[in-house]
Amino acid sequence: MNRHSLEAREENLLDTPAASGAEWLARYSGAMLNVFGTPQRVLVRGAGALVWDADGKEYLDLLGGIAVNALGHAHPFVTSVISSQLATLGHVSNFFASPPQIALAEKLLQLTGAPEGSKVFFTNSGTESNEAAFKLARRNADGPDGPRRKIIALEGAFHGRTMGALALTAKQAYREPFEPLPGGVVHIPFNDADALRAAVDSQTAAVFLEPIQGEAGVKPLDAEYLRLARELCTEHGALLIVDEVQTGVGRTGAWFAIQESGVLPDAMTLAKGLGGGFPIGALVTFGEKTSALLNPGQHGTTFGGNPVGTAAALATLHVIEQQGLLAQVRATGEHLKAGLAALDGVTEVRQRGLLIGLDLDADVAPAFVTAALDAGFILNAPGPRTLRLAPPLILSVEQADRFLAAFPAILSTVLSAASAPTAAE
Ligand SMILES: *Cc1c(COP(=O)(O)O)cnc(C)c1O
Image (cartoon, rainbow, N blue to C red; front, side, top):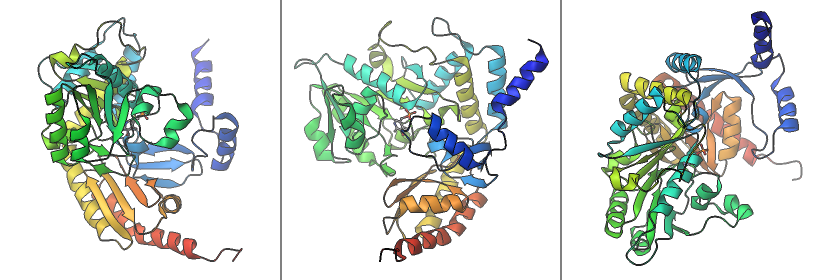
């Protein structure tokens, strides 16, 4: 095949013909398994914190692909590192090692502050990172009072959708259709120190915590609770496993949210922002003893740790570091929090860096999301009156202000639609 015909093919594959969003969505419904409902827009292009849909409309992306696009869309440095790695060596399987994989593992061990003997396992998603952590927990079975079978997770927890991660996830609507799930997981009340004291015992293999529950509407655990969890796990020989899939990689203005409490976990799971938009996840096991729980043959992956994904993550971490984005995230986040808290109709703002949940004084959050899209802003509603923002870490104050300025009109559109008499009345 000559080069010319290959180029023509590439155009057919990647060029988006002049179809409208509505036409694309009709094709979507005809071809895509209906597990997501109908998407609200068809997006075709992005740059920084902006994206454009198939009809040419521009949006300020305040959700960042659910806390994934840490550096926004089409970041030039990440794009060039990914493409040069892909043009050099794209995939080798774990029969072989590659330099970006090794360099990224070392970088993560440095950034997490993991002690001597700590190790990294790479995955392709958050749920896979938690599956690996679940298997790690199962291997922590030896206990003084018989095998450790209990794994503790919290009410409101979201850890993913594959069977092991789903067993850790609390939401009944996600779990019930797929029972029986892997056994031994108990869910205890959120941020409740007494419930934690009562639950952790000598037959506990692990405690899984999100330092901030993102899917539950951005609910942080108290630092004292995290320290108590550390103490109890140490006392009883259970693993403290923190799920930083959403909160990690600078999202909260620290490299990892747990670091703000001073607690060192026994394992940490990562994904979402790690690859700056490229799919990659990781399990970091802290210390020699925990890292020795999984042995050759006990876990694996074909794609995990591939040169392109690990290069994307190296590039992302490099930019965050070189551009001092952690400090910028803290400043922009606090600016947004102050602005949001001052708005009529907002009853509470929960903010850590650029992970922000806000409660409205009426159950109109889903309608708000729709009206915000019409006004050119992307965010989501994890609850009936809760909105979540997880914008790119590069969001500027000017962009944040644009949303703050538009907020009152969006909310009043939603409230007047909610109170308008319907045809039936
Ligand atoms: C998104 C998320 C997951 C699941 O990640 P996927 O990449 O969707 O599998 C797990 N844990 C937390 C805390 C998350 O926010």
